[in-house]
Length: 176
Image (tube, rainbow, N blue to C red; front, side, top):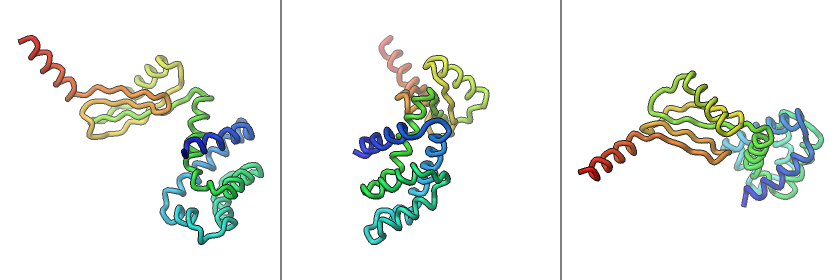
């Protein structure tokens, strides 16, 4: 349900803002979205004990980019009781901007450190395969092997040592 609501508001943002303005709006929403990670902030926004006007003032005080249209957007969210959807709106806006610019971010998970050259090589390969600008962030994890995810494209690929061992054992057992 929250994604449906977020999509409606993002559509309005995309129609209202263009170019550099849209980038500033996205950056401001990113800042607001990170504020929702603070429990106290989320409690203030969700409680009926704080007036809508005070909630709006709090949100506007956090904005990096104070634009009349953006303030009106925040006011509209406030009036409709949708301030808690700001994180979802930011995520959807980021996704729509990625689609528009054909740029995507992905994650590489591995149990060993992956060199910068390997990451760049994977970026080139995936960018060529998907005809898009793809950048990866490498994270060390407990995953035995290498796992690559590009959520916005719905792509996940992996090479698991455990799976390879299981397939080899299965193949040997079939041969016997």
